[in-house]
Image 1 (tube, rainbow, N blue to C red):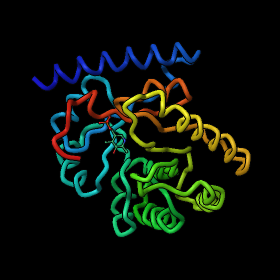
Image 2 (cartoon, rainbow, N blue to C red; image 1 turned 90 degrees about the horizontal axis):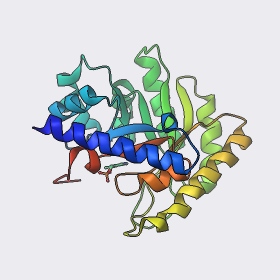
Image 3 (cartoon, protein in one colour; image 1 turned 180 degrees about the vertical axis):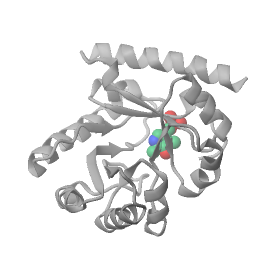
Length: 234
Ligand SMILES: *Cc1c(COP(=O)(O)O)cnc(C)c1O
C-alpha cells in the first residue's frame, strides 16, 4: 500500500529533519516540511495528509486544477513552487495559499489584482524565488533586482511577502550546495534590513540536500522523492 510506504518515509524524513536541526542548534519545529506532490495522484496526497503532512507543493497550475476537486474537504495548505507564467497568475492566486516562486514585478502585480478579485479573507503569501546561480535554472529573480521587487511587493495590499526561495544547481556531493544555501540566507538578512520588513521564511532544500539546507537555516524544505518515491516524469 502506498499509504504505508508514505507513512514510513515520513517517519524517516522527520528523524532526519530533527537530527539536522539538532546539529545546527535549532529546534525541529522551526522547519516546515512541504510534501512535493507533483505528478502524484490525489490519493497519495490524502495518504500524506493522513500521516501528518499539512503543506503541499505543486509545480503546475493545470495539474493542481485537475487534482484539487478530489481534495476539497482536506485542510491542507497548498503551495505553488514551480515557475508561474503570467497568463496563469489569476488562476494561481485563487487556488493556492502561497506562491513560492514569484520572480518579477508584473507577476506580483497580477497575483495581487487576482487575489483582490477572488475576495479571499486571507492575503496570498508569496516568496521571492532567487536565481542563485547555475545555468540550468531559468527562473528566479536576479539578485540585483531583489530590493526593487521586494519594495514593490510590500506596496501590494493583497500579498504578504514572507521570505525567499531558491533552487540551487544539482551536485552529486551535497556539500557543494552549502554555499548556495548560505548565500540565500545572507540575501535574506540583507533584504530584511533594506526593506525594514521581517522575512522569516527560507524555502530551500529538496530530497537529496534538505539536511544541509536545515543546517544553513532553512525554515521550509520541499521534499518529493524521499516522501512519495521516484517520479516517472518531471
Ligand atoms: C520537484 C521539486 C522539489 C522536490 O524535489 P525532490 O528531489 O523530489 O525532493 C522541490 N522544489 C521544487 C521547486 C520542485 O520542482
